[in-house]
Length: 390
Image (cartoon, rainbow, N blue to C red):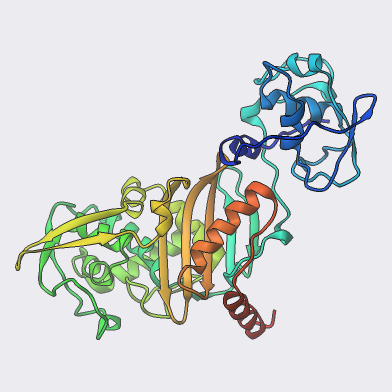
């Protein structure tokens, strides 16, 4: 048997608040009976001898209890389980980077190679009606709910807009004007950008990704080589090339409910977008003042994802979206417990419900448990599921 130790516990060393722990209550003969609330991490913390790392202690506990830690379930300790507690010598004899042994059952794995365990997805409660979470390193689906339903995706569309524009290799420092003539969805939609004013293509892309500025996205399509119609055709061709079989675009902003996709398809789009360094950079920019000409004016723009301002998050790519037909939407490429993840969250109710779902996913990955979904968001979720026949 090979033992795998979840990398996620090392992140807990940084994120859990330090507090005094009571000594482990031994049953005698170096044994301990698990009580409610016990985790491998806090048991290891309480028995760690001087000079030993948490990695050594947790590995030693796993080695000492092969029948308990099976199939990576190191995050689940059942109340009443009796553990054999390793002696100090057993713990300190282990190396953090693994030791050699002829015994398959006593060979600790190199920590960098160990696969993190996944918590029980049934214990995760979300406001989003359609959702998917994947580990990009292994392509493991950690969570999926209505992930193949074809639904409006609002401004998540702008990630495809960005990729198509960058694929054209047009000069990023070229000054282009704000144009919306062909995007009829923008009629009577408020924007601070003045029609005809001029800014660099790069700043137009920044506004599109960071602030979800609809006139900026429309302008990128209007100034595309081949024109607006060719741009929309390129969006759909790119989707097909990526294997996004449930996706279709009719315009570049996401204001149309006819821009549709599925949570599963959007994991493919996020993976593709992450290959563009500029998309990662611009989508995670917190804020910027942008100066326009013809006429001259300056506007401040901010990221639509408030988690960008939260330094406890490690976000490499993000895009938000909202129209009434799509609900609140969010996609992110992030890193939790040294695990690269794509989150796709579609159709939730409440201004911060999508952000709340991202935090619920993080809490679930770190603890195995979910936090509460607000009542109004939960009721919306249930109504939508009923409409879907679920």
